[in-house]
Length: 244
Image (cartoon, helix red, strand yellow):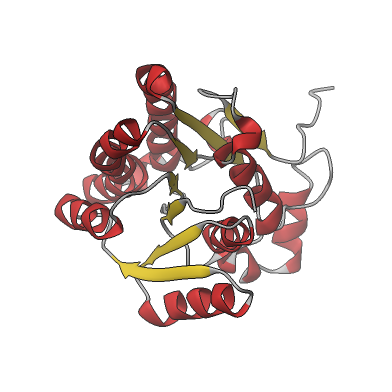
């Protein structure tokens, strides 16, 4: 219960990695603000946390709308831990990308975290500390076919992570990122076995991650156990294959 008394906001917390992070943070004693767009799924996560003795509430917001992101920050109030997990991905060749899709990726994957950090960090500084973890992707560092928009938006988030880490370090606010590799999500659950096998074979371990495995890394960086770590991008990708 190392995070007892802390308030944590997790964006995109109604499924996949975000859900696993919210549940693990609650197990660590944090009061969790579960963000999402689906109130029913949000209620399920809150109910699961409460059934296990934790504290949580749901806040709905459209993170593609900067004004709604600011409203989310206002409703969240004094946040000690911010997990920027919500994101979108559409894999397309450049010829099939559209300005609208590009804007969607940048708005959700990059601008929303920026707006939340800008809104919530002053309170962390005033209270003497806090922790921010941005969920990136292995595709931000490894060339992956069709991920131009997605990779660019997450690479920008990683650069912001480094800038924020230096900017807020002396004020006691740590900023890190986790870069997952292939992870089991509702999206991968819809894939056929052959496709999943191909994805798994891109890792040294030969399997995709469970959301809980990625969440462990996120919660570690968010907690006091990582008190001397800031500005890092922790790769949680099952290892890379050699070129030989």
